[in-house]
Every structure is written in C-alpha cells, then in structure tokens.
Length: 319
Image (cartoon, rainbow, N blue to C red; front, side, top):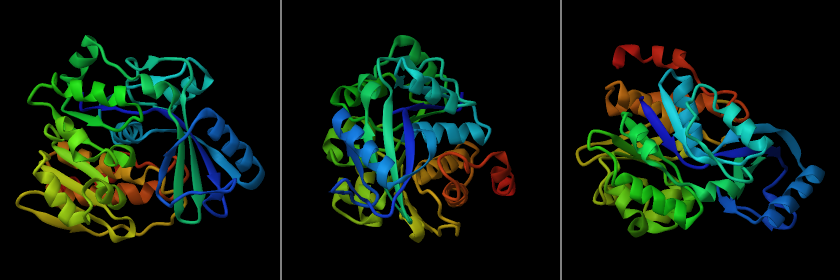
C-alpha cells in the first residue's frame, strides 16, 4: 500500500452564488464553518432559492487527496466513517480506486455546502458520522503496511484524540503527512503536538498558517519545523507555494488555469506533492507536480478535473 488516508468523508453540494452572504449570514472567503442540522438545512433552503446547484461530489480533505492519488496510479486505502444512508453509498462510490473496505458506518453521513462566488469559496459543514471516528487493531495493521499515512481533520475532540493515539502505533518506517485545515489550525500547535512531532510533511494554506502560528508563510513554516515536521509546505493561491525545510526554502510558482471551482485545490496539491515524494523526486519537482495537479483540478467542478497518470509522465525524467 502506498498511502492510507484518514479524515472526514462528506457529500459536497456545490452551489454557485452571487456573493458569500447567504440568508443574512456573511461568510469569509476561504473559510470553513461547522453548523447544526437546523443551520445546514436553513442554508440549503436559502440556496435553493438564491443559488444554483452545480452538482454534488464526494468530499473531505484527506479523502480528496487519497482519491487524487488513486487517480494518479497509487495504491490507496481510507479510514473514516459514513452514514448508513444513501449519502453514505454515494460517498463510497465517489472514492473509486480507493480501498474503502475499512470505512465504518454510523447513522447519517457528513455533508458540506461549497459556496462558489466568482473565484471565492466558503464551506459549511455538517459532520454527522465523521464525529465518531475510531480505529481497530486491523486498521493499525493496514496503516503499518503503507508507505505514507495522510491525516486530515475532524470536528470532534474525540476524533482528534483517536488520531493522536494512532500515531503511537505507527512503525518508524511509515511516514506521516498532515493537512490540519482551518479546524485544527485554530487549535494551535500545542493541541496538535503529538501529531506534529511525528509528521514528515505538513501542508497548510496561508490562512491556516496565520491561524496556527500568527505568522506569514515562510516565518510560520520555519517556526513549525521546531515542532517536528521535516518539510512544511504553504500554498498561497495565485502566488504559488513555499516549501521549507531546515536547509531549504523554495518558491514554486502557481500554474495558470481557468478557475471554475477551487474547492479541494490544496488537497490535490498535496496528492501531487506526495506522488513526487514517494517516487523519490526532489522537493522542487514535488512542488511543480503539485502545482500542475492543483491547476488542473480547479478548472472543473468537484473531482471532475483531478489529473491521472498522464500528469506524472510529464515529470518522468525528473523522478
């Protein structure tokens, strides 16, 4: 197994809107908001009246990365929780190519509204089953059969606690990559310390870096190296990305692309980066693969534009 992902599994409802003010609620561009069932349903009702449903897709940060790696030709599996409902069936079907045999089921599936206003995006999440993430001895065996374990985030304290316990069972030869997202970034370095200490590659965007460290991309990345990660990657949208290690600081330009839906762009970036890293590419090449993969993903809605193995062929001489 190349990569096992762990994180939220959602049905993403993609709505095109004129602005990020819905039902009298002003949402910040790039933000992720967690709501109750009542809030979520109120938003859906408002969006049916004022927005345009562009479709639905499987979602969840780590799920997107794991699915993207499968499309790139890597052997992947996923650990998470979906509902015992039609949405749960849809989510599992949306993970085509990924081994989802260990995904557990509990009541109602997680849902996410993805608001697309021009080139801005905001998410509203109803976690549901995701809050009940746990693991078994068999799950640990699966993790330790892989090259990488890739962590995303959950909303529940208990799910984060499970992730912290999991890292204690990982063999030393298994690398850990980590995408904290806004939810975990808000918790700060202290609460994430057990995971950060074990992390090989840490992925953040500029907003998350500010939340987590109070600093900009480069300064924040340098400070996070003191917490354990060997490589810290910060994506900066149209400004590209920065890759920082104790001995290296690389700026990777963004690839130009038509912007349709930026949801999951950072997740696909992480997939491209991990693909290069697994195959022994330089950090610069990893960043270039990641940037190219991300650019392809934002030119379509949901997962429609995720690249396949043809992308890696472009970089074969450098890997």
